Length: 241
Image (tube, rainbow, N blue to C red; front, side, top):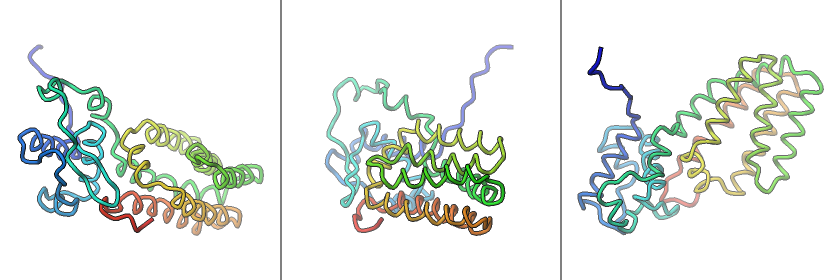
């Protein structure tokens, strides 16, 4: 049978980004103009602020807007004629199916606290030593991203559940291949933020060392909700961590 077309689901953040891009093309927002605040856009569009945040980050990667942390989001200078004529942009193609940062963090919230609880019950002495070594290495690193992954993966491995290890590896692969997550980190993950994360890691580590599953679960959950809060800071504010 012929005549069918491939079916795809357009992500919510992509729909928001496309609406804003259309208004930029139509001249409703001009180069150099500040866009409405995320809270206002969320109210107008009747969507969540994280979805608006993801849309704005996608638009920044595509060259439509400039994010100035502490000031706001501004329409970028006009692009060349080829782009204005609607030709596909490589950046747009690269992120069209990118996993939204907050979707990814929601998935981690489902998996990682249970990994920590199981690690507190099941991890061997040598596995706990690996978790501790990863935490200490993260604290000492100039660019702690890879060490951060090692810490969380060591906890998953300490859970004793191979399926959870595979799930955790997939989540981290998605994170590392996400242009949107990387851009959010560039804006909001400073040395000061890493210091906060290190303290949160230490609480998780101590709970695992003390063989306290409930506390380990709670500490890992608190760490991830802290990440979500930090990545949701208002673009126009430079005061919070």
